[in-house]
Length: 333
Figure 1 (cartoon, one colour):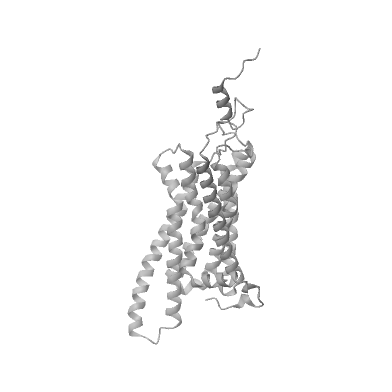
Figure 2: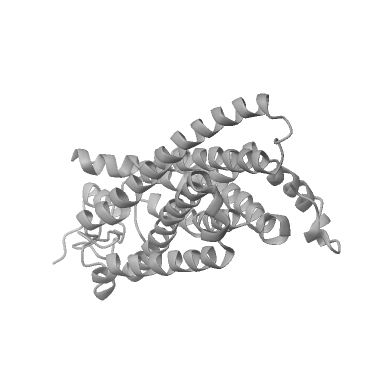
């Protein structure tokens, strides 16, 4: 003879992600409707803004021939990874913000591939940008020889190939048996080698970036002082060499801001891992990692603030002047 459910039992069953799976389903922690609506609105707005701004960067560098420089190819690669973050990663964060994961274990693992690939590509691109600025500032005479379009293209290709293999390496065990690390049904959890991630994903690239840009900063300061002293003494020589040095220093400054903002957004999750502090609140954990993704929206804003060519190209794109014949040859600098 069956026993009728009490009101308390009915409430507990309603709190399950999958009420029909009483013994294995995760519990649903219902959030206030206002909080959920605010989260969806903010995430959707930032996602759309990230996609739009990075698409402008991609179109600008791809379309105008004057912007086809080795450094801008690296910026283009970074913009592509930021574009993918806004298009694919941020929208899926809405599903992760939900109390339950409803898309299945395989989709959960496949979803994590995208952030791993894009974040790894962003880190490697930052290292390449730092190397580019290091050579441009510290060895300017050999820069055109060492840094060519072909070498940069090969470097960018290797960057993305490495990012894909990096993601497969870290998520391979999860692919063999999706959902093996879930404590209950309706959860999206993947396991990664934390030590290897700290070494390959944080310590080596971040310290490389810091060391390279410290060297760039020291040399840039000494060059700036040298230029100021020589300009006053030799006005006639203030031509190609000085102009090139000034442009390189300005590029180093702008990309230095990009690198600095990236470090401020990228480092907090790793600092928490180093400290050993365990974040049990999923909401807090969610927003800490969302700061990392939000960096993808900040990069185009930095370009807009520091690069006149970006503001000019955006104006031409918005006014559809890039559809005109020979618009790619427009003087954008």
